[in-house]
Image (cartoon, rainbow, N blue to C red):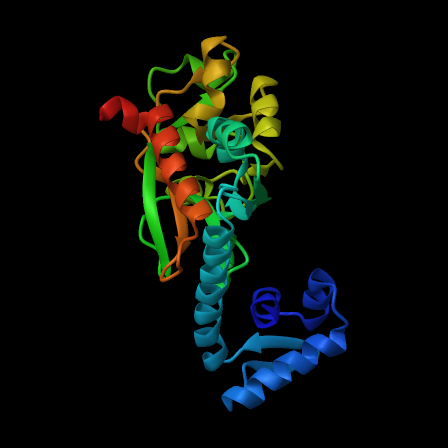
Length: 294
């Protein structure tokens, strides 16, 4: 357990704090483990550490051992039902617009399962899953295969280009890339898959730099105030489009992204993690575009 915590956090100090151990105890345990195995598990580079190849191999076994221990304890104790904490990497659009039915399900049916939501971009989520600091993660990307991860596609996520009803581009019957390159575009931070794909599509000498906003809600307010146009998941602006506070612009989006659920390849899934995956697939496919297409 100590090794897994140090390997996940890549810090003896932080591992000691989370385990409520003295740092010297953590260091002693890791040294004893290295001596027992006859290999070094960490490269120590000044004040930083990283896993050696042997350490990376051992981390996979450590996670399986801990998961099996947890499963054994639950089976022997019996009768208590699923419990524990799942660390979930996610993003604003998923948390606010796709996850509420899933969160409600766990709150009412499995109150002993604590879902710890960690906001992160897709690349950060993939890295955290491979390192073991996230148990499960939501991705919204064009690619559906990720090295070192198992994934399940929940839905193709429709995107829509939106503007305020009074915006000049809202009066157009069709739009060209030239029109969009000269427009003020409100966007999420770089690293968001659909933002990066949009930016790549518009790349050119005359392209106006994107105006970056911290959140989707801030982007929506900016759009409704007439500050510019934005490309967003359709689910995040459905209410505003229905109320005619925004309008969808006539641009055929030449790329698509998929909402996915991912976890580390080879990891032994606990019953809580299996339950989360099963319910996420059921609820989000029922709620999303895949339910309409069958």
